[in-house]
Image (cartoon, rainbow, N blue to C red):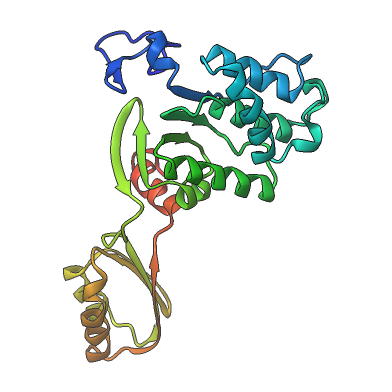
Length: 256
């Protein structure tokens, strides 16, 4: 809808201060869809030149920018090959280059690392960071949560078209600290006493797992367990991964 490809059933949206879908605002946006289709008879350089001209970039600028972007995505040896000869990963890379050919202020990337090997995924991450550093905003949609966690500054969880919650990944998420404790003599009273600090608690023989909203209370919890007679021989705080957060936030109503 923000790109003007789908019409909303109600309401209105503004992008970069202008109504969504307008030609002028779309010139300032780069887009790589997940299921892209490029003209197979074009070479990599021709594809970038075409999209550059469609975005209003002058021919003189394109003479420098096309080879620079081809090199940026690691396809210089293949710049004159037709796209029909490209692998899925190579098409993904040239697709990313076409989304950046006009140096957009706003970039939408849908599953940009799909089909890429580990080196390719790292390359995409570096390119996204470079776009951020030059002042662009990048919207990244992906089901590979580890990529989101490494790449993004903020994450938004959406369910059934509604924003469930958002998180700032640049900050330590103190309300999501998980602690694994291994101890002998974990009495029911010792475990029950954790309720004042923990949001969830699980006990499996000599292993206790709980989450707490602040790591500042961890010394108090350890002292409590020792005072309750537990022989603690491992006390390991762990920050919840983005996948753990996803399952906790999105899976609660789905029996996950």
